[in-house]
Image (cartoon, rainbow, N blue to C red; front, side, top):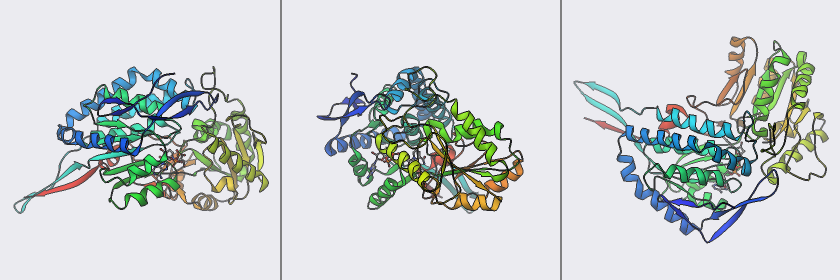
Length: 469
Ligand code: NAD
């Protein structure tokens, strides 16, 4: 079994205690991960603090060069990292949207972010004076990540924070710590010491980071319930926050669509990473005139998708990553059927023996059904008919979450007018969940605070300083 270490101040750091990490496909023990104490966490935060003055005073272009070096080293080691992701997270290594795709996305995101500039803005220059708007780094940024896209989400946090001059402490989910530990070890082979550090252990480390007086910002991706805890414990030290929280994205199919043509896009919009994606489509509203055909096309498409161990030839989807999430999915599907849902494919399991949940489609009339109203974060999609577009928009917006949404139509102008009325941060047309590094992404309502990606995401790691002369 390979040894994994924390990285503190550029060097491997051992801990006395450890915790077990399992492969969700086989239940096998993969590794013991380091379990840091609060004292060890303090040491790591101090390293990040000590590295800050030098890192933040580098020229911006020097940090851009370092970020490109990170992209290179991750690319050179992408197979190794993808293998770790598949072992600990479950997504298949060779699938179109599997772990090689995740590391490929991480490299592409890193390279794109390195191209962003942060120029000084001149707000005034005339006979009355000159006003310059500068962006200054915050200090130490703590990144707290979930278990669904462990490497990609960590990259979304780490790269803009580093580029804008901050140093970082990254805490991955205890379910999937290994790929992050290895990635940060690799980053340290090309960065000055102390600039990016890792810490693994239990949830208590996240809580400790959130109220630590030497952390200036928390960028958190995870559930809405935990995000609220982070926000409240960050209050005492007035930390900057970016909170990327749970979603319950709606897709609206307008009556002009060709059901067979849109079936693959609808399927992957909902089932990417087995539905364990914040901005996956989690509710699908279809006009009644084409409802049966859409249900049938989607069912036919879904039947041919292979679910299996991520190292099995042809597997496109893996297991649910952990038992807690598996039970949530199974409970919501069970309740949806008890409350009138009709299973089109898959369905609830009586005595599950492993973490493989069947691809499940449920036809549902009632928008208050539990599978519609709650985030399932797994491979089960409710499909709800509607009669008027007004009704579809009202049902889509009748939820606390507001991360993403989508509209499906051959009429782009019509789709855009529906998109404008959806209460969420990103709306896709004829696709779903296709985040990209130049398009700021974040939630409205209970789905979060602030955005990542693009210039706006980069600037979220800075303070404004104006110099007036
Ligand atoms: P989670 O909230 O249980 O855990 C996320 C992280 O928070 C983990 O690292 C965990 O150790 C840490 N944590 C736990 N308690 C903490 C505390 N009190 N203070 C600080 N940190 C703490 O979420 P999860 O189950 O790992 O991830 C699934 C959820 O994440 C889903 O709701 C999903 O929608 C959401 N998510 C959102 C986005 C987005 O961009 N909006 C992306 C991916 C996942």
